[in-house]
Length: 175
Image (cartoon, rainbow, N blue to C red; front, side, top):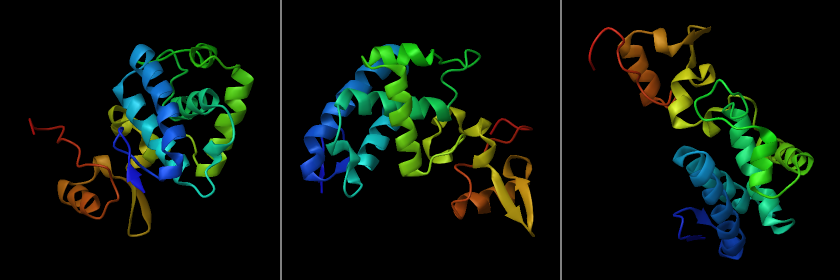
């Protein structure tokens, strides 16, 4: 494995395809979305490039790029116009020059391959993590608890154990 110009570890054999896909996702994310979408799209492209055998060896780079951003968008409600960053699904697909039906089918393939569900914590934009309930549910004495409402010492321990993404700021202070 080597590190690409995009600072993602991918197998040498997949380097060219990875960079081709990421140049497309970066362009669309820069023009129409934001840096968070670009970063998660790069990470997903690298994840797919590392799969053995990599599915990226088959198919058009634009289709893969569009489907990757489509999946990240689904997890983060990109297609909901009440979100700060939003766009219609057909507009996203058009940005990659692919049909929505093709993009939707390829995105389902990615979701199935990577086991991605709605609100998937790993693929949630950092700015959306605090709003994602799946990132905060922990088990305490056999009960599911939202760590955001737990005492600070429990939050700190849950973070130390890798159960929550960060310790939220205390709502009652200026921390």
